[in-house]
Image (cartoon, rainbow, N blue to C red; front, side, top):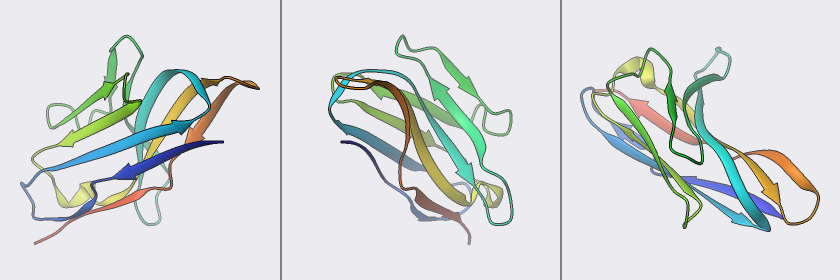
Length: 120
């Protein structure tokens, strides 16, 4: 059984910062790309940022220069540091991971989501 558990969401004022964490657990042999996605009300889920096992990163244009994705491979954890937050960043943020399980091979997993609300 594999789980991705997110934490760190909440309510923050415009211009503020939040740090999201997502820890993977279970029967995991290795983790390839990890990433963060978000879904605002009435909108489709969209990519925020991804990071490979080697540390290569990719960001949505809307968050470049404000958000930073990082990971700790030993802890099987990915982070999203969000600075200069804007009301339009309000969404449920989901963690995603492409991983290899000890049994049954590769699979893609989603976390349960964490709410981020940017409002004064």
